[in-house]
Image (cartoon, rainbow, N blue to C red; front, side):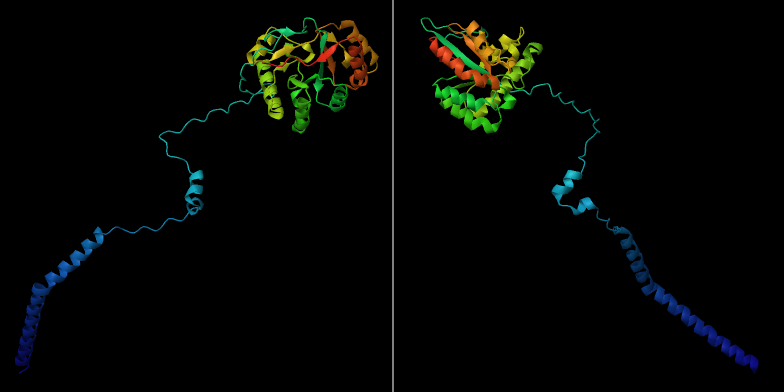
Length: 308
């Protein structure tokens, strides 16, 4: 009996197992392939998509506006340029380059590129009174004395002394008939300087003074009368007359003996002479006597001939 029951149970389990196998086979055949295909498709699709990268951190330059960021960026170049040594600056003694002025026409009785010490006029007893080294503390008092005597003179001024605050008074002097010439920029002995140095000094001084007075500078007196072989050609190149002197008062050395100034002028004065004086206290003191002497001896005092 037991064997019959076991055999019947075994048969049942075999039947059930067979049915399960048949069912699983159907599932695989009908749906399994589709499911497997979908899984394979998903896997391939995932591989074909780009992998997202994390955003980079913002730098300080990136946060700036484009114009600011550009100033800190280095342009892309094929090669790095080797840095060059910085150009050495000029020494303080070298004058800056100034535009060359146009040549002036020769004034009556004068010649460019020549030393002018006197300007005689046939039949006239005329002299020319000149003052160096201004403008300074005695300029206005000297001009007042000249104006009171209805006399005009020529003043040779040093560029570095001619500050902008002097411009209004300088223009007033010009309207009163006085003349202003150049006496270099720093009162240096030009006889010790090269041609190029002298040329740049003349051009720079003239440009500085012309800007302040609004009138062309055509007269030049070298400090100390110091010149060399280059000096006269330079004055001709820049269009300025070199004015020296015939009667030297030597007033600069006579602070304690002003009366000797008049004595020196008396010794050297003659018709056509250019008289050299300076803007000094002793010169101011004796100036009325100098003017009185010249008038009493029949001299007419004039300024230098203007350029044509």
